[in-house]
Length: 253
Image (cartoon, rainbow, N blue to C red; front, side):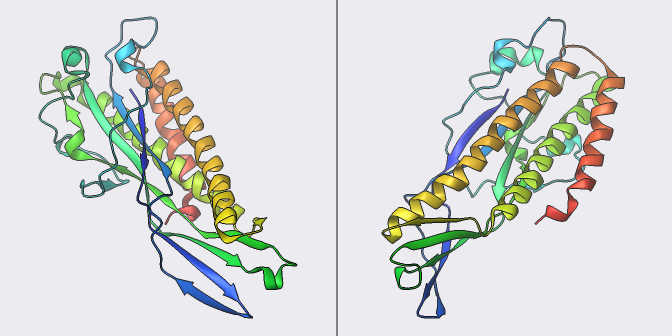
């Protein structure tokens, strides 16, 4: 199962260029919203031709809580799953869930962008992204391990959750790469607020595209390894994820 929610209070910093020098204004724009992904994964023990409804991707209205403790990407252990119960929406299916993992993308930098005034742009304001980066995190207090899980299944289930975590870290690194490549792409308008909105829309477009890719990738993985016990195919996913993490390592923040 997957869910996504929005981070409403993302701290922003913009540089306003005026008369040949740069002024830095540390301002927080609470009205701007950024999509931050939360994916909740239920390891389903299989036996059906397709993922049941409770394990399928869905949107969540759960608000972002920056006070919730998390761990950055690393190898997981059973002890990382600290939730004592499942959420009310899925607790009736606990006998069919081996583990429930909450992983998400979190910003690791303030968003920084440059705005140049109309005096140097033929009457137009121009803006471009300077910095924005993300990382994957796992939320232990929202992740649950079935205490009734047979010991011989532990390795398979733990590897399954590790791959979901790796896929999220890969998504973060890939998004960082795309945002970095977008640095310098300008938008223009007749006033500062309009170019801010245009720039935020351009960045959100990249984030929304990443959201769709994330959903597709996690769904494909679950369909190939959750519906059936297939350690060989899961190992292939694990090996491929390690290679992709290595290939994208330069984009870690």
